[in-house]
Image (cartoon, rainbow, N blue to C red; front, side, top):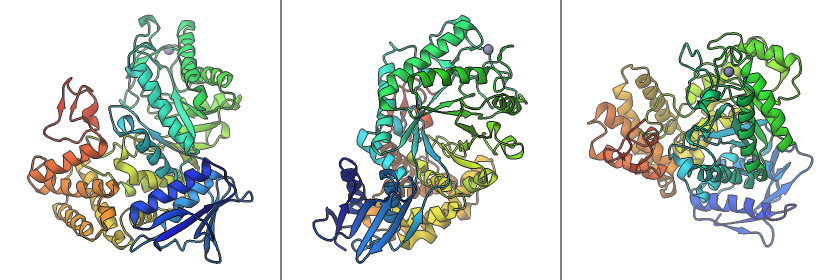
Length: 544
Ligand SMILES: [Zn+2]
């Protein structure tokens, strides 16, 4: 097919124009076919079907027309995603033969964009952010989380305060324009000029898992409580017109207070403060839903889960979701004892930082086996979550988790295959899977300070070169392939070659810097955390 005629019915602009654009851009990126608005009989029809679940879609066929129907315009986006991923793009466009109905299991299928350190989310242009939000929505995501960086700012008059606010508003604007919900986070970390006498007592962080970063305020003094509510309400007022749908209250790193009246934080001070913030938030945003995070509860001090459970037995109406997760395995309490308040449970999987440093510094970071193992620990009770993301280099990981949330039984392996067929080519899927297996095991062995398998490392680079030679030009240019290809080359250079200063490594690292929009010379003391270790890179103010 050289021309694809698309008709959108039952939807007015701007939704109709936006969805047509979503299809057009992605098909025309992948093949020579041209997508046009249908004049006569369409090849593809997009429509709303009120009988479908609000987030469900159906793909069927009426004569020669493929009909994608959704229970809402957002659901239609999910249907378009399935259609695009299962179509083929060799020698023109061959429409998907996938037929069926699908709707999500999880209700809150989010993604957390950590927008800081001049990482990609921080510096990408508006159009790139908008496109990227659409891309992940096509995989089934329905909410974006981003936070305001009180931790780095001295007050609303800090020169960076307004740019940071605009950054957050920009992210939420992109989410809203794609039809997604938004979530921000609050806790007791405030501006770093907060009065010394209001500050929290450092946490007794025995295992070093909670962190004591940021300017934390004790909520158990009247003045501290007042400052927390004043500052957080000011932020919500500044965001009110963007439409904040969810508010996540967060206990640790950043956050916490170890004083006599607050501890154990997760069972006492944090709950009281969260209840106060929730009440305040609902006075500003009447429809806002509250997600109460229990991240790293009981690691230690013990008794936090039980304390929360006891508290929510006395009334759970102020909380809508419980979020649970940890640095490694999923916490046992909600699995063994039950979710406090009998509320829906979501997770916060770390898909960005485990097993690579700098984050994304040597390219793509696929971890399908690790993601599957952690998912299996809790998939029977989860209703979604917010994977933590530092950049676009774990794009494949985002697809995997989004599909877990959509269908808990769908394996990471299946999603990797669908991803590879769509983003690279259907003919290279087996080789891509083999290559990714090696990249993951290499990263894991290296992280655990064990010897990597040098034969496998060479094999992954050979696979990368062989796949690259077979890909269509559009896939060779696709950054999602480039970051995977460069990762295999860089693994070879650093583990079996001359290291990361060879001409091949030098060019690969510089290209990654370009893809991530890194600053080759930076004043940001944290930028090296997200910048590939290219030898010419400069951190003028050092590295923290
Ligand atoms: Zn305190």
